[in-house]
Length: 483
Ligand code: 2AM
Image 1 (cartoon, protein in one colour):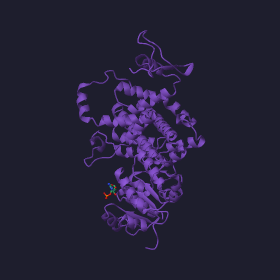
Image 2 (image 1 turned 90 degrees about the horizontal axis):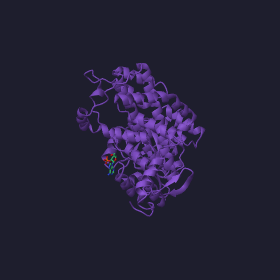
Image 3 (image 1 turned 90 degrees about the vertical axis):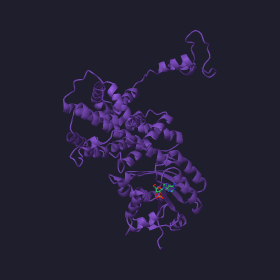
Image 4 (image 1 turned 60 degrees about the vertical axis):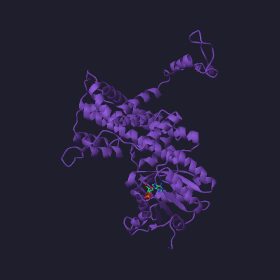
């Protein structure tokens, strides 16, 4: 072989194969490898036939076919498989070579691997890859983080193959260590939220307005022309009107028990760990959990009754517009919460995150791609240290414009007994976030009463006081006293 390959890719499942073909289309020579090496031959003989892709029979063979510094990208199952390959690659590589993990790895693993490989003189990147099989083939959203020294060596390949939004690549350096995989995880959490929001709008149209499927699809088609323009609204428009072979709407035949692979749950866990109120994603994850209790719900439905008094609904067109505005306002809250989590994690891990660049990475290529992300990018471009999206003029006025409709929808849903967990939690968050005083003073008093945990006074912050609330039980505080 005369010309050496620009990059190696390990892992020939669909995502790996499609990324290779995408790189090939953009003029890069890729060396393909897979644990089960028969898959390499099959790939070269079929999907990669007629391309510049070369194959390798072993890791040694693969490494010998690469330009220096060597770039090796893995798209294998997250977890042990990644560590196993790293262990096998390390003795074959030289200082300055680059290992990239494009799988759905947990960000703590990426953090650990980046450090361990840095000590060996190797540069590690953990990159989020979003957009599914089609994205991988024709332009994914890529969120790379890890050892920044590696970035100049992979930038052209990554930005070359990434999706483009208004001509700009949906890929930029995210930050040190596990930052790339963390941002990908939050992306997936936001995806859970966006999906649940659309499901609640569908439920209201179906149950409150008794709309048929073509009508609902037409409404989403309209919504998709405005500020809600997004991939998820677009596919839901098509799903709703999709007919099965027997002429009935397929969506109604699908069991209402949602699956999950775990990245939404990871985001919710991270929110709890970092103490950030990312309530909408949390509710979206719990909504899937509740849905999966199908048999129990069916039983409960026979025993537990709903509201007896039905509210009088507005005119249908007006209520539909209310639903649209409730969805939009809730979505703004969800992204505001997602960026709060990013900001807090960045503080803890010392990641220098560029929030505008993250919005641009999500603007195209991935499942949450939308016009709305362009507005978020604009907000962070205007003020890179914006403390919260809700405080940006554009989003502040959007929420203020939508809030009457939003409140009407949540009230109507409550009165009708239709669950809208994400619409409702978003509104509760909005009202909490804009409250200068919350009832946490009473929580502090309760904690001090039963556990002597102490409290601070409004006019004396920093000074911790314990009160003997009952007149007996002593004046000890929690630091000296275990309840
Ligand atoms: P395989 O084709 O040999 O199974 C997606 O599952 C990709 O991850 C496939 O390329 C698969 O290789 C690889 N993979 C899964 N588990 C692996 C493991 N424990 N070690 C190496 N590769 C693995």
